[in-house]
Each structure stands twice: as C-alpha cells, then as structure tokens.
Image (cartoon, rainbow, N blue to C red; front, side):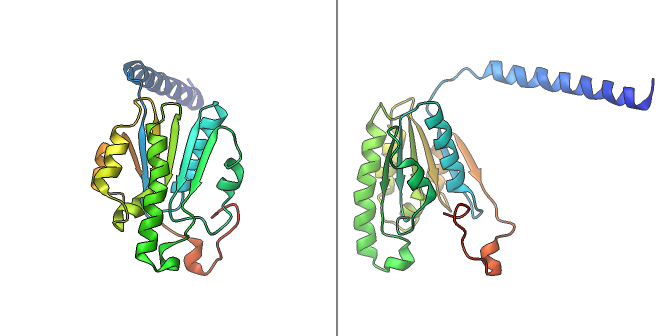
Length: 202
C-alpha cells in the first residue's frame, strides 16, 4: 500500500471515530431550555458575537429584544440594521460612555430606567432572545442592584435565551450562565493609533 493510500485510510478511520463520538454526544444532549450566554473578557468581539446570534435568531423568525447599555452617542451599525425590524424590540441607554458623562447620578438614573426595559423583556414569554449589551459594566460600577438583575435573569421564561456582554463579568453572572466565553486580546489596532472603523468597530 502506498504512503498516500495509508494516510487516506488513517484519516478515514480517525474521522469515523470522531463522527461516532460526536454523534454520541449529540444523542446524549436531550435537555431543551433557554440558555444564558455570557461574552466577556478584554478582547474585541463580544457585542459582535451577540449581534451575530441576534441575526441568526431573526433569520429563524424568533422574536428578540435588545437593550444596549453605555452606547448610544454613535450611529452603531447593529442598531441601524435591527431597529426597524418587526422581530426586534430595540432599546438604547443613549448616554454614551461613562467617562463622557462624568456624572454618576445621571448614569445611575439612566441605567435604572434602561434596566426597566430589560426587565419587561425578561418577563415576556413571547420574546425568545434577549441581548443585554454591555450589562456587566452596570454591575461593576454599581449602577444597578445586583440582586435585582440576577433575580430577573434567573426567573425569566424557561425557553428564553439571554446573551450578556461586557468586560469583567461578575462571578455571580458566570455562575448562573450556561455558556461563558472569555475573549482575550493579543493585539488591537487602536493601540497603534488607528481610528475606530465603521463596520468593524461600530
């Protein structure tokens, strides 16, 4: 048998074993429930991933809700794309970044008001996917009551999926999540003096 043929045979047997393993794991996955996904870490791509899942959900005809904390002063592409979609209810805190407002009381007031929109979505059984973009900062800065937030997340409808984004997710958020992804940062163009880019960064 030639070396090429032997390699092809080894590859086929390895893929057969892999398929058997994957098929077995799929067969064992019998739980059907709403997931809580946390996307955290210092790397770029947390919100991008969340809105990718939102696009996928809309593609499947699911009813979705979005609440964006912190952002709001720039024209974000995701907002322009989804805001008028009949399957998406979109809310933005609209204060901009905390270092721009420099007003803690104003930020807390805006966060609490915006969280009220999130709570309404988290109680609505007709809303199948909820994106809480940059929520982690509201807890880190103490703008929202942590117990109130955790209670709403844990007591949402059983089939509702929730995606939370932001750096430094608290241990409590991580503990109640089903899936947690931490995005690391190896390199970022901004630190080399490159301006934020339309379509890539916002």
